[in-house]
Amino acid sequence: MVDSEWSVTFFAALAGLGCALLVWLLADSVWALFYGIRVHLMPYITPQPVNLTEMFGTWAVVTGSTDGIGKAYAYELAHRGVNIVLISRNIDKLNQVASEIKTNFNVETKVIAADFSRGQQVFNNIEIELKDIPVGILVNNVGRQYSYPMYLGEVPQQELWDILNINIGATTMMTRMLLPQMQQRKKGAIVNVSSGSELQPLPLMTVYAASKVFVKSFSDGLRFEYQDDGITVQHLSPLFVNTKMNAFSHRLQESSIFVPNATTYAHYAVNTLGKVNTTTGYWAHGIQVKLTQKNDFP
Image (cartoon, rainbow, N blue to C red; front, side):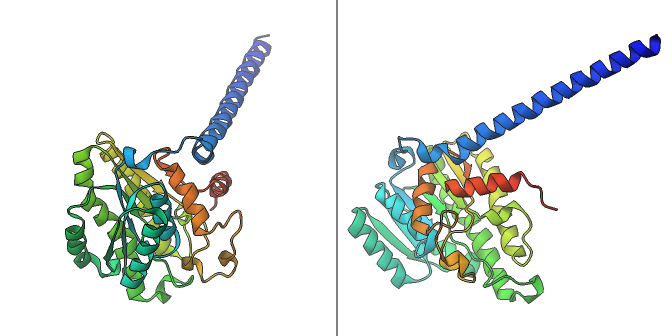
């Protein structure tokens, strides 16, 4: 009799535990769905766009702005009435992009030629050039990856130094340079462009992927440090975009719903600024990331 009562009690407790676990799993799934919609879809379909000049300021600095995502992002900001400082290596391409922006969008522009692969020596001149410009938005877009996938021992040393100086050094030092004026005005936005390669280790692109993990961690820590200063820190993590950076793959040079061109990507990405702090920037990439996160890779 005692054993029978014990068995009933045991199985009742087990059933109760199972029900509790089921409720928890359902609640977790519902929350994941809600969070996924809010992060990955709502920023794109919210009818009222953010007034970027009111929220952050009238000037933006975009690094790596003569090609790809950087150029398209600068165009999109200009389309929304933001004056643009373009920073890249090639002065001829900088002048051409600046001229196109002024002609098409009737905003002010400034160009600064700087090769971030040279490291510390480039920042003094950039700081002098920017000292009288009230920068409200900093887009740390400049980036460098391997010429093509290869083992670490095959990557030229200079290429590795370039990745470290550009992907980590430029992001860190440009942010440090412009934070004080944003703090003083109690508003501003820092957009750190990372990559979906941060999601998991990426053999044959090891150092590039690791540098993008830095960008994510840097963004998360920075957001916490300056959360009381009115500064938005957005971590932007695109997957594949049809740009010159992916020229090693013919497949990635063909635009599709999952591999948008830079113009399409930038339109969606800018629309998330001021709405969400961490995003892929593009709805189809958001779906891909959610699917990836549901499958743990070894």
